[in-house]
Image 1 (tube, rainbow, N blue to C red):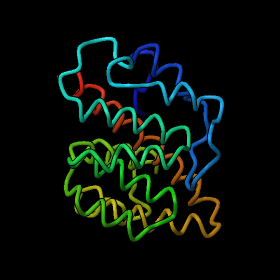
Image 2 (tube, rainbow, N blue to C red):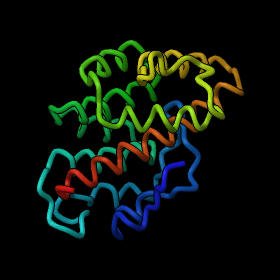
Image 3 (cartoon, rainbow, N blue to C red):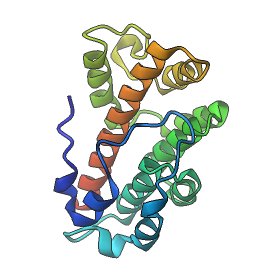
Length: 186
């Protein structure tokens, strides 16, 4: 289980990220109450420490928009981050809007990401020690297989949906934490 605690990311992100919020596998329902706060969030005011990498900082902001189901706003930010991490957020966003082929395009641009190893471990843990959906062939996270599984979940298989939601939450938490730490040079 990830040790995700929103409080460690400072008061701005703590106010924007409700860990009890259900994870959407599609476009979700925007949390309109947070729109103004999200819109006011910048690299300059979101972090309590000195930012040393603006792309990773912007990735955190993109992730906060995505967490609250503002896919277009997340997309606007992530498509301007020309890194594997920007492509990762971009791929998640397209997977969420059920544009599966476009999601795969962006995951191809990601290649192997540092978060994939932790994500593979957490995915096995969530499946009680087995790779029951074949997301980790040869021990490596396969984002394309996960896109396919999310597409299957979207067709109404409730057990697959619950598993995909759990993996999506962990994926978001791991990627956000990774971006936050890199933004601060950790």
